[in-house]
Amino acid sequence: MTASETNPVDPGPAQPSRGRRGLVVAVAAVVLAAVIAGHRLIPNVAGLGSMIDSGAPFLGLGIPVLALAALLRRSRLALLAVLLPTLVWAGLFGTAWLPTGGGGTVALRVASQNLRVGNPDPAATVSALATTEPDLIGLQEVGDDIRGSAALRDRYPYQATESTIALWSRFPMREHVGVDTGLGWNRALRAVVETPQGDVVVYVVHLGSARAGDTATRDRTVGMLAATLRRESAERLIVLGDFNTASTDRAITPLTDLLADAQADAGRGLGFTWPAAMPVTRPDHVLYRGLTAASAGVVRTPASDHRAVTAGFR
Image 1 (cartoon, helix red, strand yellow):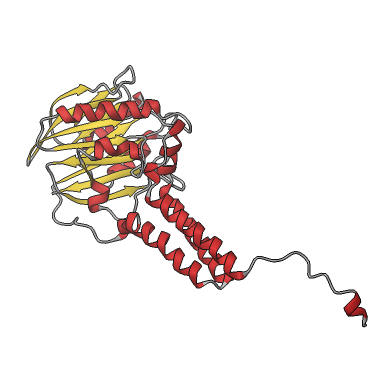
Image 2 (cartoon, rainbow, N blue to C red; image 1 turned 90 degrees about the vertical axis):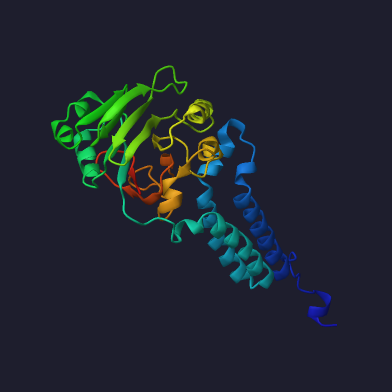
């Protein structure tokens, strides 16, 4: 007998087959597709579901990782399975880059900007926004320094303020009142704006903050605003501001069930606005009814931690 016969080489622990490794990738792809499609069904325990909703578009980053793993495994099954989350993500989020129903002559332009508490130069922030030539500017986190801006008064002679909320207008405002959103103080306002095409009711809002593990205040303010809007009888209505609620978050549904979203109807892309340097979510919105959205976009302005949102209506 030879040495090799008496002392066979130990082959070591068995390695998983290529097919088995491909199956693992395929299962992971199916799970990812299910999470992308059903992220709003994840229980919202301690705000977890809301956080996942807000970051849902970024779940798509798992797709190229799984595709690479499938290629390395040389598994046709895994590659086919990766198509599933790809199609689901494209159906939910990719359509935001497709041509929309916008266009046409704009009769009314609006903009909204969270100025940021402690903004070192809020006048520069608003002046940059004013270069987009909106007819109405809704502001949040407003201080006394911007209320007295002479440069803004020249362009926007009509102004309504409520605590840290302001609306600047090129057109007369017949009335304005504070709106209770359940914060204990009014951080929203309602104004009737007399545009050349007729009255438009405009709400400027700054809803409650949402933090990891704590969305109760935000959720309560969304509910109270939705209840107010259900009672609102105005034919033409615009609601703009910082909702502290992403467009993909289930928490915004009570509002989007009542009003259309200008970015979804006439914008291009997901329109992220926060944080300004590299935005990853969209807490700032322009919602409406009784008008037709012709355009929508996002504007980077100096000194604020939010980018501004704009919309044009015909």
